[in-house]
Length: 410
View 1 (cartoon, helix red, strand yellow):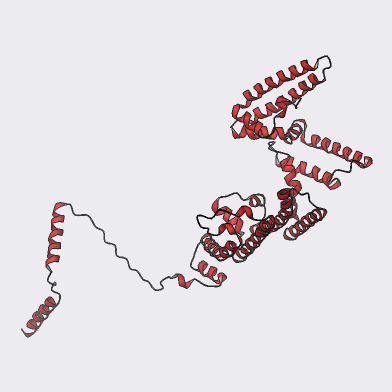
View 2: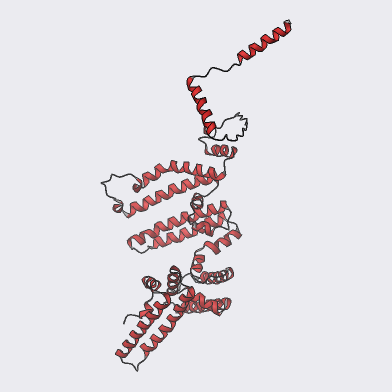
């Protein structure tokens, strides 16, 4: 009996300890409202998922921030940060550091009052060139830091992220990333040096001095030597096929021709041999050398014709005519078949031949010749406009070509 009484007392004590707390008036109202809502709509089916969250080592940015960028990058990599995100963070930070220097150099970046006019036009040519030189120095310094920290070229990285054209990157795709970056920086450095020399000529209309020409040749030599030190022999050979001045010249001569790789390599090889022998045309006052040059030029054309074949050689010659180039451009702009442009170009040869016959016909009086040529010009304009369409025809004339349609001034 004593044991039963003791257990009963214990149960009462436990029940008293876990009794519900009395509700306040607001809580009783809330319970009543909840019951009312529950009575007016179906009860939802609930799934209770229990999750155990253990925060043993909470993350804070202060754990990875560091003045030493290399340590900063390693810590970011250590927490699994994506490489592209790391590049974006570092590049943005470096941009902020260099922004103050660039603002100090470029007056156009400074704030002006609303009543103040733009005075960029008052800058002297020397001041403009000096500002460009300082901006290039800052840019190359920034790019070198990014390359040392991340192993990427800043210009290439920005072009990739922004989806803009990467002129050097497109042509240097055969190189691994590190050599592509080194080669790009070498090219841009010497291109900027060359531009600084030629800019004075373009701005002021003054011819290059002998000193300027000598400096340009020295820069070209230094550039070629720097590239040769960067690349292997195989890479250098491919670079010359891709980026040498002759490579640009050969590609330009194939405009609209759509050459195969083998055709390009063939033309490049023949032109290279010819250019090494004749880097410049000889002096007209040296008849023996001039005769040899003419003979070698004729031999080059013969070799090109033999290697390419009659049809492709004719297309190769056509591709170098400025009239054909502008016809192709006008046709492409207004979605006209390039075949039509080629037909108009062939028509040009017929017109010029007929016009020469009329001009050389001594049986016609001057008035008769003028009338015949005027009729030919009118017919030619009508025919070409009908073939190209009025918009493409006018675009072709605006290019400065198309003199053959009306004929030479009389």
